[in-house]
Length: 212
Image (cartoon, rainbow, N blue to C red; front, side, top):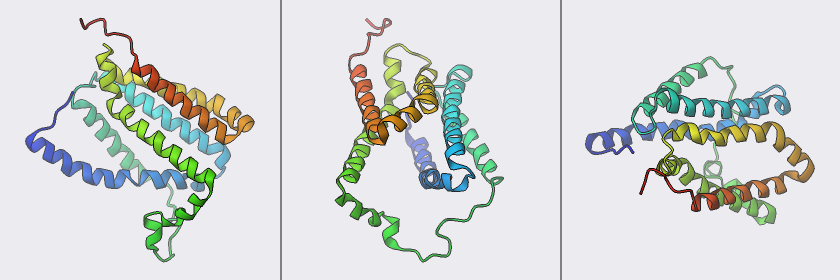
């Protein structure tokens, strides 16, 4: 486990603030990404699958090449990859912002235009379920590696990529069939139920053979 103290903690805080400023743009970018593709139905799943594949490669590189789950090397790897992606971004086609030339409305900045949608029961339930799902995601991403280490799994980064490998399988084969046959609502219900089952399984893990 890496601990930040003194000047190192201050530097970390100074760096993470501008990082979050730019990282926050990835959300709107993913939302508008389909608009930049020629054939959205065909090309967007390919882009999405490669994003998951990149996550898998990153976990395997950190685990089995650098063995850096518990060292600062993982941050150097991530920073180098982010720098390369940033440089590559300048080579992408120029796409004007969707709202270019339109007046700025403060309501759009904090999402006030979406409030009337909460009058619809289905939308309100969807947003509330998304909130609960997001709460469950954060401890998994932040503490999943530490949790697996307590179970005696040293290469936790590579081990957790099994989740992304399963995601590739679901995105490519299962998800299209489920959405077509059962609709998005029941597909999401099954996904949330699977998450709940995962955390229930984490609740009673097998004992670590290396600990008395």
